[in-house]
Amino acid sequence: MYHYISAPPPDADAIRRDLSLPLEAFEAQLRYFQEAGYHSITFYDLVMYLQRGAPLPAKPILFTFDDGYKDHFTNAFPLLRKYGFRGTFFLITGFLDEGRPGHLTWQDVETMSAAGMEFGAHSYTHPDLRGQTVDYIVWQTLGPKQAIELRTGTPVVAFCYPFGRYDEQIVAVARSAHYWVGVMIQQGLRHTSASLFEIRRVRVRGTDSVEDLVRRIEYLRVLELTPTPAVVGLPQATSRTPVALP
Image (cartoon, rainbow, N blue to C red; front, side, top):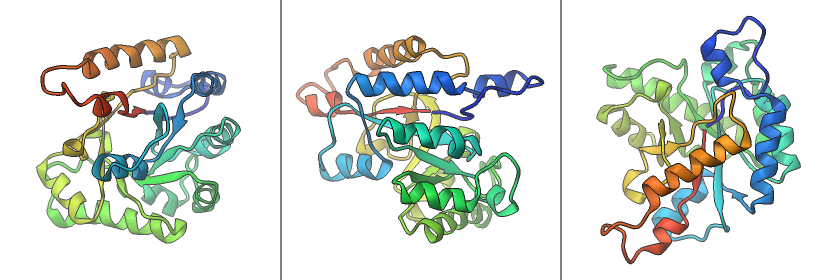
């Protein structure tokens, strides 16, 4: 789970610093994953695997980017292509409609989509959707999906909950809008067909080195994927579970 792919500005607060991964550190992480034999997939691929048993490449990995910042186009996109990876970018589509500085444009999205990048929705204006009316949640979920699909010509299957906050009503509306998955900010690696609307990821912080990130992934792997009586006899479900990065 990535946010900014750039160094934070000099006056950045603690939150912005935590969300900002310098370009050099991002490239070092991509280089590591390439050399370690990982292959990037999309949420479409993940669901096809979990629901229908469609094959995945060896060591599958999902690279996800929240909020649709401009440096996703200027910095992340070129490096993903350099290392042969795809990414999934979650857009706050109202910001694109406004032409908000520091965020992607629809032209950026079209260019990235044509190059194989995947896009998901992160709502229209990024509000906390809990406790809202059904009509409001529909407006915040269905409209962004339709807007992205119109520009890219590809299905939008993933909805990223604003602030990572969700409840049963939000999930029900997302399902009714024909999303396949709901994406959280909670940490985790293991994905199942029963938890498609509770997809966990691995948060990448601004200070993370390659070693920091690998340690976090391995810790979660041991924590979540060590065989238990509930999964004995299902080695495929554990060994082929993709890692989803923030």
